[in-house]
Amino acid sequence: MSLVYLTLQLDCVLQNNQLSKRLFSWRWVEVSSFLCVIALEFSTPSEFIFGYLYTAPILLVSARLQRNETIQATAVAIILTLVNAWSPSDNDTKLATIANRLIAAMALLVTGFLSERNRYYQEAIAQQQAQIVASEKLMRLREDFTSTLTHDLKTPILGAIETLKAFREKQFGSVSIAQNQVLETLARSHQTSLQLLDTLLDVYRNDAEGLPLHLKTVDLTSLAEETANSLLTLATNRRVYLSFNYGDADVRQALWVKGDPLQLQRVLTNLLINAINHSRRGDRVEIVLGSQASYQVVKILDRGSGLQPDEIPFLFERFYQGQSDRQAKGTGLGLYLSRQIIVAHGGTIWAENRSPTGALFGFKLPIASPPWVSHDHNSPKNPAG
Image (cartoon, rainbow, N blue to C red):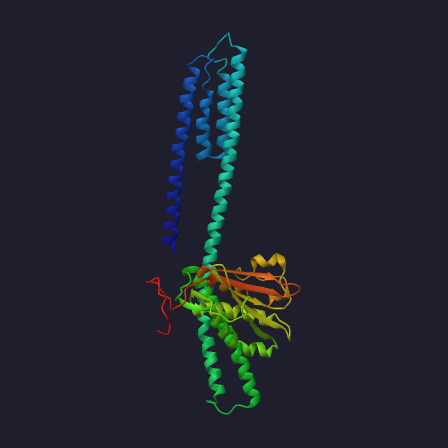
């Protein structure tokens, strides 16, 4: 320990010596510049005002030395400029010469003041930049810690899910109806926790590495119908009805996009679950599908409590929690992950209020050619051959 302490002390001494040498060299530069200007001033008649050249040493002092030294350098420069009006002795000092030297003295005073203000602003900017760098470093450490912790938490949760599954399959003996209900509740709770952890991992991974996409030609209409069918049990339990609206033509049509089916299904699932959870019993959630200019559009409409207008711009921010009951039910991750996915596909996602009640969440993606259309030739191919 004593050796380490001595090493640290020696390092500090060396750093202080280096700093002292730098300051000493800059003081010599300051003194030399002052001497040069003094030589010009006092070797020429007082009518020739070289005092303006004192601005150079003042700026040098302000840039490298302390505040008190800047004040001292400015004061010395002003005094020397004024004294030079009478020294060397000149019995015929004109009023105009004195006035010019007073103007030069005021200019030096302004130079000293402005250089000191500039130093203050530079120090403030440097301090703010250091705080920003420290905040970014702390944020990265927090995100790395959260990502690592989230990954490590998956193992015990997966183990608990498998253990509950073994109990439900009566591998450890018979299970009563009441016990089986408790096991189902525990299994659902662990599955929810696992989904949350997966979402957390995906969010941090996407922010750090970007979202990997496995692109193919996808029919949004079929994907939306499959996703809605997978959520029928949830909707039925909450007494919420799901319906489809196929746009102005009111006829089912394929909406082809270039995308990752798994990731796009996650977006649809997030938006539909969000709408179902915020709907009242007996309400209807409507999935509207259609085309708009060069985009395919999907809208999820509900008749819930709606959104706070001032909170709409922040809905897709990470971990955002609004003040209304509607936003307070979520974790702030589902919508953020949905935005990550849609933006990675070159699309747009948004939210708005409905009249008189409810909310609309929608996204649009660039239109793609159907899979049977060749990208190598101008003529289309018949899918039937």
